[in-house]
Picture 1 (cartoon, rainbow, N blue to C red):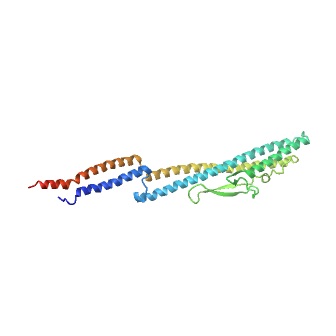
Picture 2 (picture 1 turned 90 degrees about the vertical axis):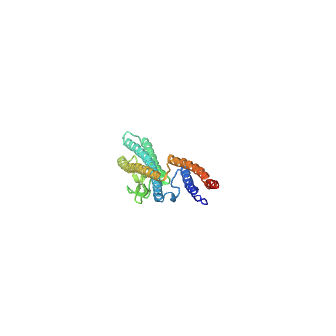
Picture 3 (picture 1 turned 120 degrees about the vertical axis):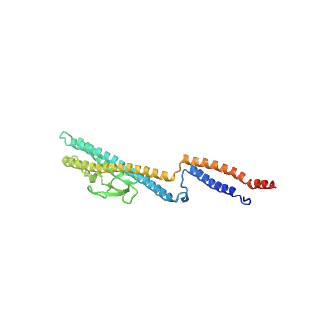
Length: 275
């Protein structure tokens, strides 16, 4: 028996220190909700966990881009709907102006309303915007388009082109509509209605695609976040069990060390009585 070095007590103390470390780690996991507070916690999984975190953040950013672009399209479509309503009213007035029973004053009243509709269409074209992005591009002619790109994913090539048209009264061809040439006016209004319909149809197809992409990104984000959670998030019930177990072991170790520290004294007392 070795009395100078109490190996039994030293072994208990070694296990005691390890249990203290386990206890502190379990408590930290419970308080932070994460089991990967540092790379040392799990060197093999920390990199994968951070990669998944980045993917979730980029999916969220792309989803925000889609929401903003969708709001822009909705704003534009609302104004285009109002333009279409104005054109329908202008068509109604043009047909009415073709009546041979109208007095000159009646035609002046009709022309005045037609001119007011033209001004309203120009106001919608020039003043409709979303976050500084305007509906109408005055540099274009006819049905020519300009585009801007919007990111709809987290990859370099996941972009969508948003088209812009010139939907001013002049480019729609209705700026010269008057009651003195009803046939030409009706033809111009019909072409304007057709062009506005094409623009709305294009925006509608883009909006449909954006909605589908948003659903897809939401599903990918949820799945990726779930995978990251399994790797990096702490199971609170499991950690509390580890914490409780380590607390019991700590208290037991303290008691055992107290007893084992008396072993040399007890051994010497026994030897004192040996004759």
